[in-house]
Length: 207
DNA sequence: AATCCGAGCAACCGCGGCTTT
DNA sequence: CAAAGCCGCGGTTGCTCGGAT
Image 1 (cartoon, protein in one colour):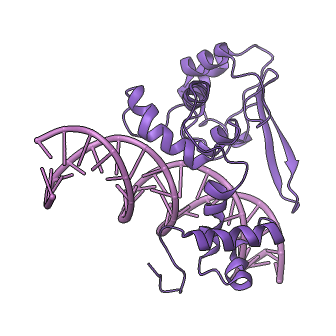
Image 2 (cartoon, chains in turn blue, green, yellow):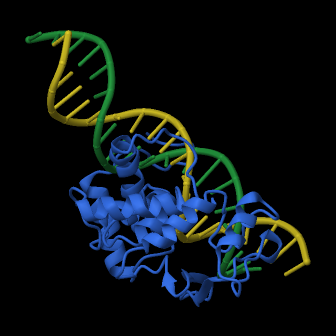
Image 3 (cartoon, protein in one colour):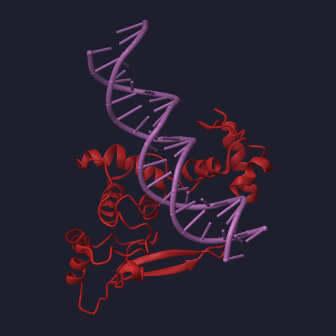
């Protein structure tokens, strides 16, 4: 239960939850590694962050997934594969861990999906990565898209026509806030309209 | 009643990328 | 510029609980 570094592991107790919540109410999120020192909680920063992000945060919705949520997860997974944080970002109140577990325990069975690497874009390490240079997928995608749509490859980092925009995080880092095709925003957490079926079909055909 | 077994889920781990020093 | 620290992601593990035997 206790690692060599003195940090506790395993399930969280109510007392630990309270210490963590008190700390965050007082100091806010972030600086997870300082919680052990400041609040005297014998948990590593990583564990604290995970506990908050996946369970304690008031924005998290607990309870069963709705059919609408299932449907959205399935559609997004079809499109982008195991990009759980992106998928979760599109489902208010759900975390990447919740979505991942829900997929692995319910949806993959429901759909008869064998465990393995995600399809469609699964090779993309980040949202801004392009397709493999001269890959059949890239060639096929180029052939499907409008003539004025310039699809780039790996060396150019981004698929043009699939526009991405960047924002700045509070600590000054760059954060990609949207990724869209023909004005259809695929990744904004504030998207109201679910993914366009024709776009899904296009991706499915190509990748 | 006891044991086994599988499903579900919380939490851990390793790694990559970004930020800070 | 390099090193150290930190954060977030996705894969995996392992504990708990309920149903079956």
